[in-house]
Length: 399
Image 1 (cartoon, rainbow, N blue to C red):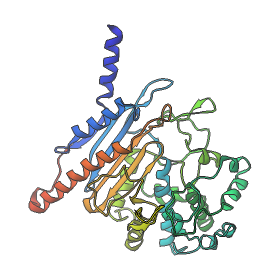
Image 2 (cartoon, rainbow, N blue to C red; image 1 turned 180 degrees about the horizontal axis):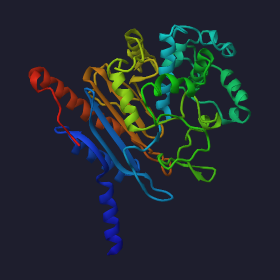
Image 3 (tube, rainbow, N blue to C red; image 1 turned 135 degrees about the horizontal axis):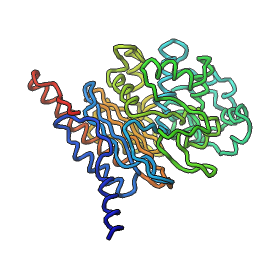
Image 4 (cartoon, rainbow, N blue to C red; image 1 turned 90 degrees about the vertical axis):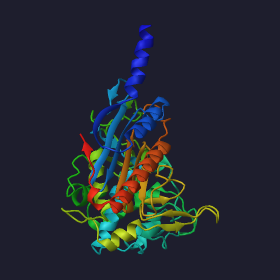
């Protein structure tokens, strides 16, 4: 009987938010909580932090479940630091590239080899920066781990010497290799490694104090635990094996952040890259970065939409709210992370989890997509009500 009661108590604990920050009075929080807790009960993730922002305000934020279940249980909190995995691609790498565009230091239509001459081998002279940002370069998704057994310089040489699997511009093939090359391009053009450039030009000016790349070997109890590597649990150490082999910083993975830090960035992007403190991008550059571009799939009927560094509507968009507008852009991460921004709805949604903990078998894209749909439906209703009754446009927030 005691064991039965203990098991019931454990399930009940998972079925409620462990940390509750705020919600708008009429936001359908119960529906979000039901989706996440059912996902936790189904072992889709051990825990998560969900944040929804609308019109410059956080209208919903909750932490659920645990950020660690092995070797001991640690509750999830809203200030948990997450390994963002492939959210690194748009947040650190693509944003850095587009800032360099704004600074007049490069054009996305330039050949990559203009800045990285060593990339030109293996018939890659015609590959442009835009091809890399859209994943249409023809490069392989990931090169073998054997390419990373030597020094850092040798690993980068192996990266630059990759062959094309298809002619540039002819097929969308999601590629970590392409974004690793972009990370090297940022360093070559700016004179600073990607982690330093992004820190100085994005994270520090926006006061994203808990966002950045982390050196290999770091252990931080504030981080969500992922899996085991060489007999130790990764907690603040990058999960991606190639980013790990490169010392923790790479163009495709390695960034860590919190829900609140991502909210700061998301609010700026909802506002077309503009904020009171700084402008990340000029309006023209923001439009160029977020406008959908048709990219060809493996067959003519598989045309998909991507933008420069971001997803729009593609085979990777199951974490996107179905009722988000065509203006929406976002991305997902292997560790169980997702961010979607819809400037037309004045909305952003972040779903942060460590779905790979403890055994790599979790799955959260559908959860993030369902929550995105709920949030987009609610935001559209708010905008409709506001247009009908301008005087009632404020949102009551409960703390």
